[in-house]
Image 1 (cartoon, rainbow over the protein chains, first blue to last red):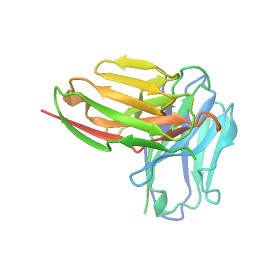
Image 2: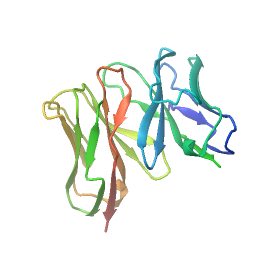
Image 3: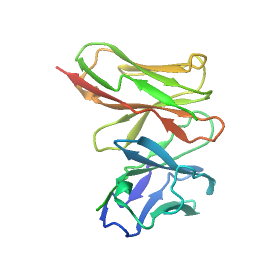
Image 4: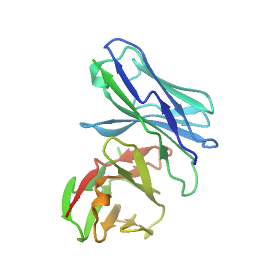
Length: 114
Length: 112
């Protein structure tokens, strides 16, 4: 049963610290997405990769966030420096950009910045 | 900017009753998704609707899509407690790839 995996599942850090979240998409999927979920804003797109190339990162604060796909099995989302307003659940999702395929979500990383 | 609106945002219903959740979106899209999220959990895909008039059913849930009205519905038949969750609709912006634009979600509580 193929699944998207994310690490860590929970992260508590202090303001100003660097945070790195990792995602392993489902093998064979060519699109990878990072979404953020908060009570106030709901689910928002942060970044989107297709065949490892970044296609859309307009939802990401560029001064502190960065997203990369160093290879087809790993996507990373970094926050440096972190701020309390970054506290949220960060989901990675992967899929195929064709047909009726859905996007499959990972379990999420719950980030708390103190 | 693509906007997705769901209503109601909160729904409390008795077991055995029927109800419909509505999802309106503001611009042309060629696919619409419904997801379920249990508290503290991830999102689980329920349906992908690709064309006007598409209807899909799984158990007590049935989803439909009217692309001309830019409207999708999620109909719940004879609700049971296990259906209690938050339901999200999401729409792909045809002009910007396959990223999802989510509604705010409908929090459903099914009571005895």
